[in-house]
Image (cartoon, rainbow, N blue to C red; front, side, top):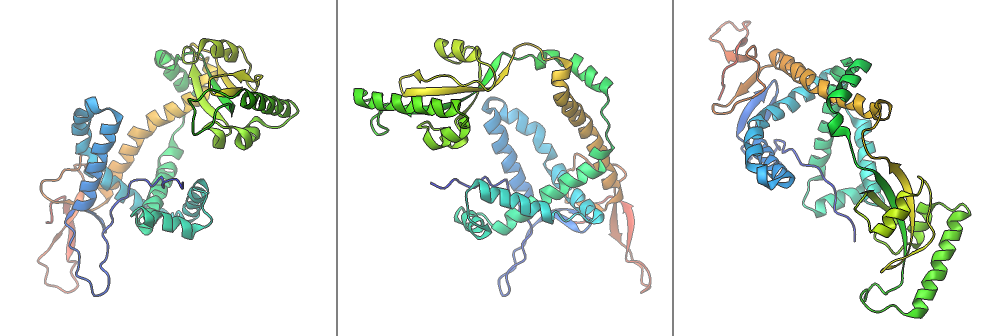
Length: 362
């Protein structure tokens, strides 16, 4: 069965009505330069946030939602400001958009882009809206990277300080990453039935042959994809990570004693015969500074990025013209924001608009 599309959340843009159709009136709650935020967009973002916090932790969902709901309009305005800046910088995102759509097509094992569009429409998703939303995400990321991220420097001293302050969070249990090749000894349609001796013998012959193929140089992943009866066959047998205590004692003793890249002989299980590979082995305890350094650099960068991005967005607000409908609040607003008001100028050469402190215009 074909997988469902991993579509990200849509942003509802103001749609122009088709020729001859009745116009669709959208309530505008904010104007940012020549861009707008509609009530539909605001309500959709609010609903998405509510669903997100509910999925993360139902027990604290109401509290978290109440804290984050005040930033919904701020985040929508942030995006419009970043899109404006992308236009100023000449960022189109065309190449990256095509690449990401093609990657999605490959993940879904579709032949061409037309099939991707049909798959979207089959799920009731506007393909054009999806592409526009994806383009917006790419543009905003590139603006942030160019205008904010490129100006941040992470020093060794900052990495060391972060390491010293977060040692308890970085401690972890000993773990391994396992892959399997399963040769079942019972039929898929009757897994609880008693194993047939002849079927067991056939399975054992097959699993021993697979072990021999791997010992002679065949890659574990390829053999798993072609021969494993396990649910992870398509992923080359990858089972993910296991800490001590999560596996049966016999399997734990065997696999935790193996080195990364090592492959076991055939092991008899309830399901049949299994071949295991340890692809990674991580000792428990606190990683050394050198081992943790790549993660430390990312962590310090993200820690510095958030305040730097908010300062950048504050400056964009001060250079923009922003209006809000009464009753809506931008939690990221600057007191120095400006807006337009109409003047009573009668001279045809006089400007009809001038800058003034931010006011509502609805």
